[in-house]
Image (cartoon, rainbow, N blue to C red; front, top):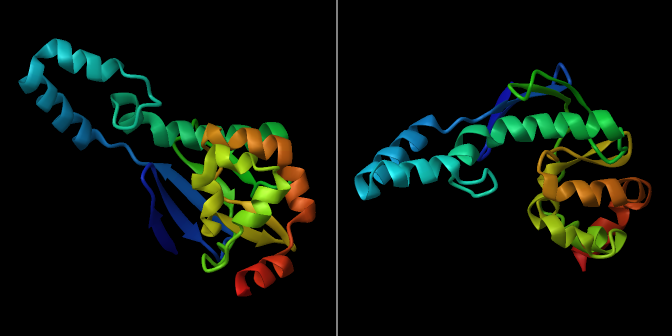
Length: 181
């Protein structure tokens, strides 16, 4: 068993069981600190503004409290609805409180997939470079590349439009050649 922590989720890896469990991180202490800060700074009206900022704003109440849950649910929903071959299967989600996903050994981050992804998506990976530039966000599953972290809506358009093409055309041999040049 191995535990990895990201900004919004904790991933518990069970390689022998061939699964990972993804749990949301809820930043309640940070929220409390910010609420107190905003109350001191500008009173209750300022604190209420903080509470109503859109979830898309990093550091907002919604972002700090719910982003991990929403990411988990989104990841499950996208896989369930599309069964996109580019996605590592997410088997189950309990309302985003935890996800169970098929285990995949992350790819070597020393290799750079960006040029190949850029070509295969006609440059559309720029819509979400965060998830596509980190090669450890991908694994090799039955000889095909699969994406491990896909809960962020920014990557969904690229996945839906180009996932099958990436799965069919991505070449690990070309990747190693490009990286050695």
